[in-house]
Length: 453
Image (cartoon, rainbow, N blue to C red):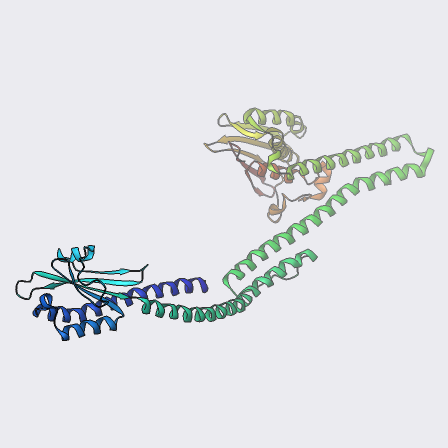
Protein backbone atom coordinates (compact mmCIF):
# COMPACT_ATOMS: atom_id res chain seq x y z
CA UNK A 1 0.00 0.00 0.00
CA UNK A 2 2.95 2.30 0.45
CA UNK A 3 4.94 1.25 -2.63
CA UNK A 4 2.31 0.84 -5.36
CA UNK A 5 0.89 4.41 -5.02
CA UNK A 6 4.48 5.70 -5.26
CA UNK A 7 4.93 3.94 -8.62
CA UNK A 8 1.79 5.54 -10.04
CA UNK A 9 2.70 8.89 -8.48
CA UNK A 10 6.12 8.85 -10.13
CA UNK A 11 4.63 8.01 -13.52
CA UNK A 12 2.00 10.71 -13.17
CA UNK A 13 4.48 13.40 -12.10
CA UNK A 14 6.84 12.64 -15.03
CA UNK A 15 3.94 12.71 -17.48
CA UNK A 16 2.74 16.05 -16.10
CA UNK A 17 6.28 17.44 -16.24
CA UNK A 18 6.69 16.49 -19.93
CA UNK A 19 3.32 18.00 -20.84
CA UNK A 20 4.07 21.23 -18.96
CA UNK A 21 7.58 21.46 -20.45
CA UNK A 22 6.19 21.07 -23.99
CA UNK A 23 3.48 23.66 -23.37
CA UNK A 24 6.06 26.03 -21.88
CA UNK A 25 8.31 25.57 -24.94
CA UNK A 26 5.38 26.30 -27.27
CA UNK A 27 4.48 29.48 -25.34
CA UNK A 28 8.08 30.68 -25.42
CA UNK A 29 8.42 29.99 -29.15
CA UNK A 30 5.15 31.72 -29.91
CA UNK A 31 6.11 34.77 -27.84
CA UNK A 32 9.53 35.16 -29.47
CA UNK A 33 8.21 34.33 -32.92
CA UNK A 34 5.55 37.04 -32.72
CA UNK A 35 8.32 39.67 -32.57
CA UNK A 36 9.93 38.28 -35.71
CA UNK A 37 6.55 38.00 -37.46
CA UNK A 38 5.91 41.68 -36.87
CA UNK A 39 9.36 42.63 -38.18
CA UNK A 40 8.90 40.49 -41.31
CA UNK A 41 5.38 41.83 -41.98
CA UNK A 42 6.43 45.50 -41.60
CA UNK A 43 9.44 45.10 -43.93
CA UNK A 44 9.67 43.97 -47.55
CA UNK A 45 11.41 40.77 -46.44
CA UNK A 46 8.75 38.59 -48.06
CA UNK A 47 9.75 40.12 -51.42
CA UNK A 48 13.49 40.74 -51.17
CA UNK A 49 14.60 38.43 -48.36
CA UNK A 50 17.26 41.05 -47.82
CA UNK A 51 17.58 42.02 -44.17
CA UNK A 52 20.61 41.11 -42.16
CA UNK A 53 18.80 42.00 -38.93
CA UNK A 54 15.89 39.68 -39.62
CA UNK A 55 18.22 36.92 -40.85
CA UNK A 56 20.27 37.22 -37.67
CA UNK A 57 17.14 37.13 -35.49
CA UNK A 58 15.86 34.06 -37.33
CA UNK A 59 19.20 32.25 -36.95
CA UNK A 60 19.41 33.22 -33.29
CA UNK A 61 15.93 31.86 -32.59
CA UNK A 62 16.65 28.63 -34.45
CA UNK A 63 19.95 28.10 -32.65
CA UNK A 64 18.46 28.94 -29.27
CA UNK A 65 16.01 26.06 -29.50
CA UNK A 66 18.14 23.78 -31.68
CA UNK A 67 15.44 23.99 -34.27
CA UNK A 68 14.69 24.87 -37.89
CA UNK A 69 12.75 27.83 -39.29
CA UNK A 70 11.03 28.00 -42.66
CA UNK A 71 9.35 31.04 -44.21
CA UNK A 72 6.83 30.24 -46.94
CA UNK A 73 5.22 32.85 -49.20
CA UNK A 74 1.63 32.95 -50.46
CA UNK A 75 2.60 30.75 -53.42
CA UNK A 76 3.68 27.95 -51.02
CA UNK A 77 7.29 28.62 -52.01
CA UNK A 78 9.99 28.31 -49.35
CA UNK A 79 11.87 31.61 -49.30
CA UNK A 80 13.89 31.00 -46.12
CA UNK A 81 15.32 27.80 -44.57
CA UNK A 82 17.78 28.03 -41.69
CA UNK A 83 19.15 24.66 -42.82
CA UNK A 84 19.51 26.02 -46.38
CA UNK A 85 18.19 22.75 -47.82
CA UNK A 86 14.81 23.57 -49.37
CA UNK A 87 14.95 27.23 -50.41
CA UNK A 88 13.00 27.73 -53.62
CA UNK A 89 11.02 24.53 -53.26
CA UNK A 90 7.25 24.36 -52.95
CA UNK A 91 5.51 22.74 -49.96
CA UNK A 92 1.94 21.61 -49.53
CA UNK A 93 2.23 20.47 -45.90
CA UNK A 94 -1.13 20.23 -44.17
CA UNK A 95 -0.04 22.59 -41.39
CA UNK A 96 0.94 25.27 -43.96
CA UNK A 97 -2.31 24.88 -45.90
CA UNK A 98 -4.29 25.08 -42.67
CA UNK A 99 -2.45 28.20 -41.64
CA UNK A 100 -3.26 29.96 -44.95
CA UNK A 101 -6.89 29.02 -44.35
CA UNK A 102 -6.85 30.78 -41.00
CA UNK A 103 -5.83 28.18 -38.45
CA UNK A 104 -2.45 28.59 -36.77
CA UNK A 105 -1.22 25.31 -35.25
CA UNK A 106 1.21 23.98 -32.69
CA UNK A 107 1.75 20.19 -32.67
CA UNK A 108 3.86 17.97 -30.46
CA UNK A 109 4.95 14.95 -32.52
CA UNK A 110 5.82 12.76 -29.52
CA UNK A 111 7.03 9.66 -31.34
CA UNK A 112 9.42 11.73 -33.52
CA UNK A 113 10.44 13.94 -30.59
CA UNK A 114 9.82 17.42 -32.03
CA UNK A 115 7.40 20.35 -31.89
CA UNK A 116 6.08 21.98 -35.07
CA UNK A 117 4.44 25.41 -35.09
CA UNK A 118 2.74 27.09 -38.08
CA UNK A 119 2.07 30.84 -37.66
CA UNK A 120 0.65 33.24 -40.25
CA UNK A 121 2.56 36.31 -41.48
CA UNK A 122 -0.10 39.03 -41.92
CA UNK A 123 0.01 42.25 -43.88
CA UNK A 124 0.05 45.03 -41.24
CA UNK A 125 -2.53 47.05 -43.20
CA UNK A 126 -4.93 44.58 -44.83
CA UNK A 127 -4.37 41.78 -42.27
CA UNK A 128 -4.27 39.31 -45.13
CA UNK A 129 -2.07 36.26 -44.80
CA UNK A 130 0.95 36.79 -46.96
CA UNK A 131 3.06 33.93 -45.66
CA UNK A 132 3.63 31.22 -43.10
CA UNK A 133 6.31 31.11 -40.42
CA UNK A 134 7.16 27.44 -39.62
CA UNK A 135 9.24 26.55 -36.57
CA UNK A 136 10.31 23.01 -35.70
CA UNK A 137 12.29 22.31 -32.54
CA UNK A 138 13.55 19.11 -30.93
CA UNK A 139 12.19 17.91 -27.55
CA UNK A 140 15.34 15.92 -26.76
CA UNK A 141 16.31 18.31 -23.98
CA UNK A 142 12.89 17.82 -22.37
CA UNK A 143 13.21 14.03 -22.67
CA UNK A 144 16.74 14.08 -21.26
CA UNK A 145 15.57 16.08 -18.28
CA UNK A 146 12.62 13.71 -17.86
CA UNK A 147 14.96 10.69 -17.99
CA UNK A 148 17.25 12.26 -15.39
CA UNK A 149 14.27 12.97 -13.14
CA UNK A 150 13.06 9.40 -13.65
CA UNK A 151 16.42 7.98 -12.59
CA UNK A 152 16.64 10.17 -9.51
CA UNK A 153 13.03 9.49 -8.58
CA UNK A 154 13.65 5.74 -8.98
CA UNK A 155 16.53 5.93 -6.49
CA UNK A 156 14.33 7.94 -4.13
CA UNK A 157 11.47 5.52 -4.66
CA UNK A 158 13.75 2.57 -3.92
CA UNK A 159 14.90 4.16 -0.66
CA UNK A 160 11.31 4.95 0.28
CA UNK A 161 10.24 1.38 -0.54
CA UNK A 162 12.98 -0.06 1.66
CA UNK A 163 11.91 2.29 4.45
CA UNK A 164 8.23 1.42 3.98
CA UNK A 165 9.02 -2.31 4.06
CA UNK A 166 11.11 -1.95 7.21
CA UNK A 167 8.43 0.11 8.96
CA UNK A 168 5.72 -2.28 7.74
CA UNK A 169 7.53 -5.34 9.08
CA UNK A 170 8.11 -3.63 12.40
CA UNK A 171 4.55 -2.43 12.88
CA UNK A 172 3.06 -5.68 11.55
CA UNK A 173 4.97 -7.48 14.28
CA UNK A 174 3.63 -5.03 16.87
CA UNK A 175 0.08 -5.33 15.53
CA UNK A 176 0.12 -9.13 15.29
CA UNK A 177 1.43 -9.75 18.82
CA UNK A 178 -2.00 -9.41 20.50
CA UNK A 179 -3.47 -11.86 17.97
CA UNK A 180 -0.61 -14.25 18.68
CA UNK A 181 -1.52 -14.11 22.36
CA UNK A 182 -5.12 -14.90 21.46
CA UNK A 183 -3.95 -17.84 19.33
CA UNK A 184 -1.72 -19.08 22.14
CA UNK A 185 -4.58 -18.91 24.60
CA UNK A 186 -6.79 -20.91 22.24
CA UNK A 187 -4.03 -23.49 21.72
CA UNK A 188 -3.88 -24.02 25.48
CA UNK A 189 -7.29 -25.66 25.18
CA UNK A 190 -5.56 -28.69 23.67
CA UNK A 191 -3.95 -29.28 27.08
CA UNK A 192 -7.18 -28.74 29.00
CA UNK A 193 -9.46 -25.88 29.95
CA UNK A 194 -7.91 -22.71 31.25
CA UNK A 195 -8.77 -21.65 34.77
CA UNK A 196 -9.08 -17.97 33.91
CA UNK A 197 -10.68 -16.02 31.10
CA UNK A 198 -8.43 -14.20 28.64
CA UNK A 199 -8.42 -10.42 28.25
CA UNK A 200 -6.40 -8.77 25.49
CA UNK A 201 -7.68 -5.17 25.23
CA UNK A 202 -4.87 -3.94 22.91
CA UNK A 203 -7.31 -3.41 20.03
CA UNK A 204 -11.06 -3.40 19.70
CA UNK A 205 -10.79 -6.52 17.52
CA UNK A 206 -8.73 -8.49 20.06
CA UNK A 207 -11.07 -7.40 22.84
CA UNK A 208 -14.08 -8.65 20.85
CA UNK A 209 -12.27 -11.91 20.04
CA UNK A 210 -11.37 -12.32 23.73
CA UNK A 211 -14.97 -11.77 24.81
CA UNK A 212 -16.27 -14.23 22.19
CA UNK A 213 -13.61 -16.76 23.21
CA UNK A 214 -14.51 -16.39 26.88
CA UNK A 215 -18.16 -17.05 26.07
CA UNK A 216 -17.16 -20.20 24.18
CA UNK A 217 -14.88 -21.22 27.05
CA UNK A 218 -17.64 -20.77 29.61
CA UNK A 219 -20.00 -22.78 27.42
CA UNK A 220 -17.39 -25.54 27.03
CA UNK A 221 -16.86 -25.65 30.79
CA UNK A 222 -20.61 -25.92 31.32
CA UNK A 223 -20.81 -28.69 28.73
CA UNK A 224 -17.87 -30.50 30.30
CA UNK A 225 -19.42 -30.25 33.76
CA UNK A 226 -22.71 -31.46 32.28
CA UNK A 227 -20.95 -34.36 30.56
CA UNK A 228 -19.17 -35.38 33.75
CA UNK A 229 -22.38 -35.11 35.73
CA UNK A 230 -24.22 -37.10 33.08
CA UNK A 231 -21.62 -39.88 33.11
CA UNK A 232 -21.74 -39.92 36.92
CA UNK A 233 -25.54 -40.05 36.93
CA UNK A 234 -25.64 -42.79 34.29
CA UNK A 235 -23.15 -44.83 36.28
CA UNK A 236 -25.13 -44.33 39.47
CA UNK A 237 -28.51 -45.04 37.88
CA UNK A 238 -27.30 -48.21 36.19
CA UNK A 239 -25.39 -49.37 39.24
CA UNK A 240 -28.24 -48.93 41.74
CA UNK A 241 -30.53 -51.67 40.34
CA UNK A 242 -27.53 -53.98 39.95
CA UNK A 243 -26.54 -53.37 43.57
CA UNK A 244 -30.07 -54.14 44.74
CA UNK A 245 -30.17 -57.34 42.71
CA UNK A 246 -26.75 -58.37 44.04
CA UNK A 247 -27.89 -57.86 47.65
CA UNK A 248 -31.10 -59.83 47.08
CA UNK A 249 -29.28 -62.62 45.23
CA UNK A 250 -26.57 -62.85 47.93
CA UNK A 251 -29.25 -63.10 50.60
CA UNK A 252 -30.83 -66.02 48.80
CA UNK A 253 -27.45 -67.72 48.32
CA UNK A 254 -26.45 -67.30 51.99
CA UNK A 255 -29.71 -68.81 53.24
CA UNK A 256 -29.57 -71.59 50.64
CA UNK A 257 -32.29 -74.23 50.91
CA UNK A 258 -33.59 -72.74 54.14
CA UNK A 259 -35.17 -69.76 52.36
CA UNK A 260 -38.95 -69.70 52.93
CA UNK A 261 -40.99 -69.91 49.75
CA UNK A 262 -42.74 -66.61 50.52
CA UNK A 263 -39.41 -64.77 51.02
CA UNK A 264 -37.98 -66.41 47.91
CA UNK A 265 -40.94 -65.20 45.84
CA UNK A 266 -40.69 -61.71 47.36
CA UNK A 267 -36.96 -61.45 46.61
CA UNK A 268 -37.41 -62.77 43.08
CA UNK A 269 -40.21 -60.25 42.54
CA UNK A 270 -37.93 -57.46 43.77
CA UNK A 271 -35.18 -58.64 41.41
CA UNK A 272 -37.65 -58.65 38.51
CA UNK A 273 -38.66 -55.05 39.39
CA UNK A 274 -35.00 -53.98 39.45
CA UNK A 275 -34.45 -55.64 36.07
CA UNK A 276 -37.47 -53.76 34.67
CA UNK A 277 -36.11 -50.54 36.14
CA UNK A 278 -32.69 -51.18 34.60
CA UNK A 279 -34.38 -51.90 31.26
CA UNK A 280 -36.38 -48.64 31.46
CA UNK A 281 -33.23 -46.62 32.13
CA UNK A 282 -31.43 -48.23 29.18
CA UNK A 283 -34.42 -47.64 26.87
CA UNK A 284 -34.64 -44.00 27.93
CA UNK A 285 -30.89 -43.57 27.39
CA UNK A 286 -31.21 -45.04 23.90
CA UNK A 287 -34.10 -42.66 23.16
CA UNK A 288 -32.04 -39.72 24.43
CA UNK A 289 -29.07 -40.72 22.26
CA UNK A 290 -31.36 -40.81 19.24
CA UNK A 291 -32.66 -37.34 20.13
CA UNK A 292 -29.10 -36.03 20.30
CA UNK A 293 -28.50 -36.90 16.67
CA UNK A 294 -28.81 -34.25 13.98
CA UNK A 295 -32.21 -33.19 12.69
CA UNK A 296 -31.52 -34.93 9.36
CA UNK A 297 -32.40 -38.19 11.15
CA UNK A 298 -36.02 -37.06 11.46
CA UNK A 299 -38.56 -39.03 9.44
CA UNK A 300 -40.85 -36.12 8.62
CA UNK A 301 -44.29 -36.65 7.16
CA UNK A 302 -47.72 -35.04 7.32
CA UNK A 303 -49.47 -36.15 10.52
CA UNK A 304 -52.99 -35.51 11.89
CA UNK A 305 -52.08 -34.14 15.33
CA UNK A 306 -55.67 -34.47 16.66
CA UNK A 307 -55.72 -38.20 15.98
CA UNK A 308 -52.18 -38.61 17.34
CA UNK A 309 -53.05 -37.01 20.70
CA UNK A 310 -56.31 -38.97 20.96
CA UNK A 311 -54.37 -42.21 20.45
CA UNK A 312 -51.82 -41.22 23.14
CA UNK A 313 -54.57 -40.37 25.65
CA UNK A 314 -56.39 -43.62 24.87
CA UNK A 315 -53.21 -45.54 25.75
CA UNK A 316 -52.64 -43.59 28.99
CA UNK A 317 -56.26 -43.47 30.16
CA UNK A 318 -56.01 -46.80 32.10
CA UNK A 319 -53.08 -45.40 34.11
CA UNK A 320 -55.14 -42.29 34.91
CA UNK A 321 -58.14 -44.34 35.95
CA UNK A 322 -56.06 -46.23 38.54
CA UNK A 323 -55.56 -42.92 40.38
CA UNK A 324 -59.07 -41.73 39.56
CA UNK A 325 -57.63 -38.86 37.49
CA UNK A 326 -59.81 -37.12 34.94
CA UNK A 327 -58.09 -36.99 31.52
CA UNK A 328 -59.63 -34.44 29.15
CA UNK A 329 -58.71 -33.41 25.58
CA UNK A 330 -59.83 -30.08 24.12
CA UNK A 331 -59.24 -29.56 20.37
CA UNK A 332 -60.03 -26.13 18.98
CA UNK A 333 -59.53 -27.01 15.32
CA UNK A 334 -58.22 -29.79 13.05
CA UNK A 335 -54.43 -29.68 12.89
CA UNK A 336 -52.16 -31.36 10.34
CA UNK A 337 -48.40 -30.78 10.59
CA UNK A 338 -45.09 -32.03 9.15
CA UNK A 339 -43.45 -33.92 12.05
CA UNK A 340 -41.61 -37.10 12.96
CA UNK A 341 -44.56 -39.04 14.35
CA UNK A 342 -42.51 -41.31 16.62
CA UNK A 343 -40.48 -38.52 18.26
CA UNK A 344 -43.33 -36.04 18.67
CA UNK A 345 -45.52 -38.84 20.04
CA UNK A 346 -42.82 -39.71 22.58
CA UNK A 347 -42.60 -36.06 23.67
CA UNK A 348 -46.38 -35.69 24.18
CA UNK A 349 -46.60 -39.08 25.93
CA UNK A 350 -43.91 -38.08 28.43
CA UNK A 351 -45.69 -34.81 29.28
CA UNK A 352 -49.10 -36.44 29.77
CA UNK A 353 -47.66 -39.44 31.63
CA UNK A 354 -45.75 -37.15 34.01
CA UNK A 355 -48.92 -35.11 34.57
CA UNK A 356 -50.68 -38.34 35.60
CA UNK A 357 -47.85 -39.79 37.69
CA UNK A 358 -47.10 -36.62 39.66
CA UNK A 359 -50.75 -35.80 40.28
CA UNK A 360 -52.95 -36.06 43.32
CA UNK A 361 -55.60 -38.71 43.64
CA UNK A 362 -58.95 -37.58 42.18
CA UNK A 363 -57.10 -34.87 40.23
CA UNK A 364 -57.31 -33.88 36.58
CA UNK A 365 -55.14 -33.51 33.49
CA UNK A 366 -56.30 -31.19 30.71
CA UNK A 367 -54.71 -31.43 27.26
CA UNK A 368 -55.54 -28.75 24.64
CA UNK A 369 -54.61 -28.41 20.98
CA UNK A 370 -54.75 -25.22 18.95
CA UNK A 371 -53.03 -23.73 15.88
CA UNK A 372 -52.53 -20.56 13.85
CA UNK A 373 -51.16 -20.00 10.36
CA UNK A 374 -47.61 -20.94 11.40
CA UNK A 375 -47.53 -23.12 14.55
CA UNK A 376 -49.60 -25.64 16.46
CA UNK A 377 -49.79 -25.40 20.24
CA UNK A 378 -50.19 -28.16 22.83
CA UNK A 379 -50.90 -27.40 26.49
CA UNK A 380 -50.75 -30.05 29.22
CA UNK A 381 -52.08 -28.80 32.57
CA UNK A 382 -52.56 -30.80 35.75
CA UNK A 383 -53.68 -30.41 39.35
CA UNK A 384 -50.64 -32.21 40.69
CA UNK A 385 -47.96 -31.60 43.29
CA UNK A 386 -46.25 -28.84 41.29
CA UNK A 387 -42.57 -27.99 40.96
CA UNK A 388 -40.57 -25.85 43.40
CA UNK A 389 -39.48 -22.53 41.89
CA UNK A 390 -35.77 -23.28 42.37
CA UNK A 391 -36.13 -26.55 40.41
CA UNK A 392 -37.98 -25.24 37.35
CA UNK A 393 -34.81 -24.25 35.46
CA UNK A 394 -33.30 -27.74 36.01
CA UNK A 395 -36.19 -30.05 35.15
CA UNK A 396 -35.04 -30.54 31.53
CA UNK A 397 -31.58 -31.71 32.67
CA UNK A 398 -30.79 -35.41 32.37
CA UNK A 399 -31.45 -37.47 35.51
CA UNK A 400 -32.66 -34.42 37.41
CA UNK A 401 -35.44 -35.22 39.89
CA UNK A 402 -37.37 -32.75 42.01
CA UNK A 403 -38.39 -35.38 44.56
CA UNK A 404 -36.04 -38.37 44.25
CA UNK A 405 -37.90 -40.56 46.70
CA UNK A 406 -41.24 -39.95 44.96
CA UNK A 407 -39.62 -40.47 41.56
CA UNK A 408 -38.19 -43.82 42.56
CA UNK A 409 -41.52 -44.78 44.05
CA UNK A 410 -43.27 -44.27 40.69
CA UNK A 411 -40.38 -45.58 38.61
CA UNK A 412 -39.02 -42.40 37.02
CA UNK A 413 -35.56 -42.32 35.44
CA UNK A 414 -35.14 -38.54 35.24
CA UNK A 415 -34.74 -38.66 31.46
CA UNK A 416 -38.33 -38.12 30.27
CA UNK A 417 -38.31 -34.31 30.10
CA UNK A 418 -34.81 -34.25 28.57
CA UNK A 419 -36.10 -36.55 25.82
CA UNK A 420 -39.20 -34.38 25.39
CA UNK A 421 -37.22 -31.16 25.09
CA UNK A 422 -34.78 -32.64 22.56
CA UNK A 423 -37.61 -34.00 20.42
CA UNK A 424 -39.33 -30.60 20.31
CA UNK A 425 -36.10 -28.74 19.57
CA UNK A 426 -35.38 -31.12 16.68
CA UNK A 427 -38.65 -29.90 15.18
CA UNK A 428 -37.50 -26.25 15.65
CA UNK A 429 -40.11 -25.88 18.36
CA UNK A 430 -40.15 -24.55 21.91
CA UNK A 431 -41.35 -25.77 25.32
CA UNK A 432 -42.13 -23.75 28.46
CA UNK A 433 -43.27 -24.68 31.95
CA UNK A 434 -45.36 -22.82 34.53
CA UNK A 435 -45.77 -24.37 37.96
CA UNK A 436 -46.55 -23.70 41.59
CA UNK A 437 -46.18 -26.17 44.43
CA UNK A 438 -49.39 -27.95 45.43
CA UNK A 439 -51.32 -26.09 42.72
CA UNK A 440 -50.26 -27.92 39.58
CA UNK A 441 -48.06 -27.60 36.51
CA UNK A 442 -48.67 -26.45 32.94
CA UNK A 443 -46.40 -27.31 29.99
CA UNK A 444 -46.88 -25.41 26.71
CA UNK A 445 -45.39 -26.66 23.45
CA UNK A 446 -45.09 -24.75 20.17
CA UNK A 447 -44.11 -26.58 16.97
CA UNK A 448 -44.07 -25.26 13.34
CA UNK A 449 -46.79 -26.66 11.10
CA UNK A 450 -44.26 -26.92 8.26
CA UNK A 451 -40.92 -28.53 9.05
CA UNK A 452 -37.97 -26.13 8.77
CA UNK A 453 -34.85 -27.99 7.64
